[in-house]
Length: 159
Image (cartoon, rainbow, N blue to C red):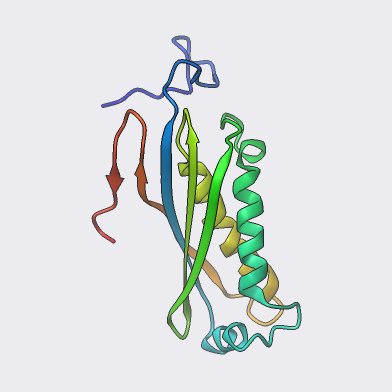
């Protein structure tokens, strides 16, 4: 089993030195879900939420968050992101699926950027709709796939 790289031999936190790692294409996809009342889903789809177009605001929030992941997660590296994409799909009247992907040509992976984007999109949906549905839940924030780098390709096989 791999060791935890963010701790030194004495157990102190550390930022991993990636200076000697090769620059390669790194890609990651993450997902999240927001469960809500069916009427809330209709309001979102029909763009009738009084705060504005929920999904477009959530998309912008997700992209912004991915770009600032290094400021939010203490030991993350600042990465020159090539792209961040966010998609939304109502899989049922009461369940919104969110998928975020991040891509960079860098020395370290973009998993945290994709996860941060997916989680932030879900939080933004909640924030914009909480006046009509405080019972919404954010579910299943998780890495779906990553490629590039020493650890190779990972694909979640229960997707």
